[in-house]
Length: 66
Image (cartoon, rainbow, N blue to C red; front, side, top):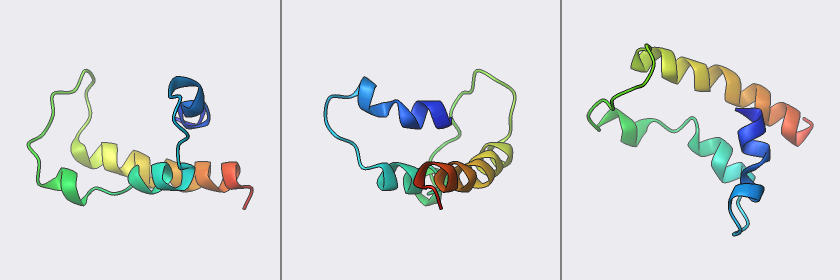
């Protein structure tokens, strides 16, 4: 996940707002109201949310050098 975030500028030519990306990764309000997507791996929605809630702060701290 960290590598993906750090390489987003290589993928997209338009400059990205890193803070916005990191905040968006843990914003689940809109997704809660959507139908569950088909996943290519076994995981519950709760597990997916837990992963991002756990990992994004670590990545943010590392990237932002906090």
